[in-house]
Image (cartoon, rainbow, N blue to C red):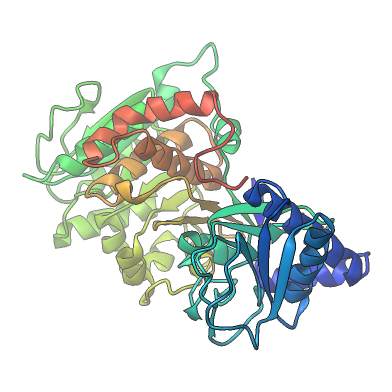
Length: 459
């Protein structure tokens, strides 16, 4: 895991550092200069323009400029307040105007076609949310210090920061409450099968779909199987249900009051996943609430199950002793809380997790997984291919499979989100549909076993 710290947390880390600020600036400048030389491919004959602001971010840039000059690079330094609208021709522009604590609006000068290297964060991006204020530069790379900031991972950050390079300058970020998930984490978090395993140790019951609407149920069950569940029971209330995947055991449930039918067998299952495609009939909502309140097994609640809980989710889930994972997208989050997540997505996920006592997997281009104690795991493995109908149903099945394998709930959800993103990246660049994802899960897992990083991840 890679620690992720907010600007406020970073300020406290800086203040607690045993070294003088001049030493930290020197180290930061050296890291920026090294990244600049790497991007330039050498020093001889190269021209660099540095835009430096009034604070430590600007001092980092000035320190880098001095080091680059010593290596023979021709360097021009502009003060951020007086820099021209269009910078002179250069092989590289260094954005050291403002750091993560900047408030206000800033327009970075036109680099005139030169690539931009950002110092800590592209100037004008909010360090907490990634919201752009003004016109921040679009960097090809960003050197950030000690740990990534949320603004590099959310909002406009990913589109503007380029490759993120984390430079160790001797600051202690071991107290970080948020972490970015890496490939190796997934391998460590999801337990392997033991030699004496049998199917019931990793059994998942999927309660999903509705008459005439069974696609979500099929996707969820197929993903649970491909995710490692040893046995999957698929039940569509009021319908015989799909006969696919053929490896699932299809057991019908009554059209309403089906929660009572779950109780006799539920404890045989490691996990019960409820919600994809269930529909929103009054009887369905009542059954979801009773199941959530009464079943003493781990639950994954998604889609129409979240709609059924609505703003009463904290009250309904209050008495649960077994783990619960909620997997809302923004609309479902608003249904649960009465408000959209807002730009501080880790804060929003933490708030819902604390209110419900559940692990919350808040879907988005950057997926945020929060535990009731405030721990957050951030997932950036996926891309726009996941923006297709039904992909969330696949994710629900993967979360259930990882829980059934024995993974701790926060990690089970984050590992599922990471694998889900990797599976999409294994698919075609265009035309990927949710039905492709379950079969791509084993491919992604195989790549995990042979790789320790993912394309586009932090260096």
